[in-house]
Each structure stands twice: as C-alpha cells, then as structure tokens.
Image (cartoon, rainbow, N blue to C red; front, side, top):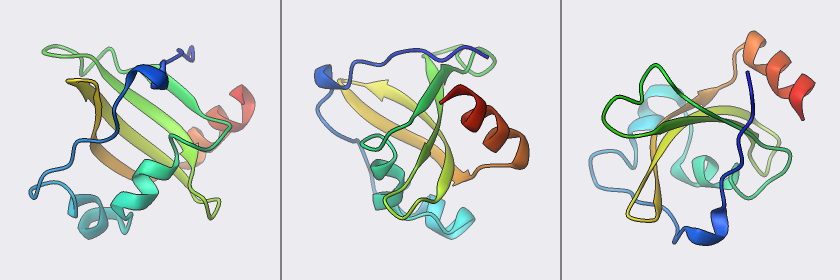
Amino acid sequence: MKSIEVNFDLLDGFDWDKGNINKNYVSHNVTFQECEEIFFNRPIFIALDHIHSHIEDRYYCLGKSNEGRKLFTVFTIRKNKIRIISSRDMSKKEKIIYESNT
C-alpha cells in the first residue's frame, strides 16, 4: 500500500450536506468535527481507493483526531472541497498499516 500526497493548499474546506453531516456519528460515533480534524493532524496516511474509484477518485485516509482517536476515513474531492463519505475507528490491520507507514 503506497501513500500519496494530496495538496491541501489547493482545497477550500469541506463539503457537508444535511444528509451526511451526522451519518458517521449515528453509524460509528464519529462527529463531523473529528472527521475534519484528521486532515490537519500529522502523521496522516492517504491512498487512492482503486476499487471504488469508478466514477470519481476516492481516497482513504488513516489519521488521528485532536484527542488521538485513530480513524479510517473515505473521502473524495469535489469542486476543491473534501467530501467525507465514511469515517470510523481503524481496525487492527489498519492501525498496523498506519503505524508502519508514518
């Protein structure tokens, strides 16, 4: 698994709508603020999700919230904004990948 660089300087924030802003909290107890925090904290591991990138590029991110919670987040970039699709706690395997690559 190879990490890629995303130039966050070219992005203008996050894209949330009423339908998905609370979805991750209901499903995985992850607030939308925690979802956003991982993009500002280091270390971060981002890879292209080849399997789910048919219509648009999808990425997955392994990162930490401000409280140190390790999250697995799937996102895409639309109109220069990060659009989070899903976020949850990292699995044991994902924690190993994150720790060995950061």
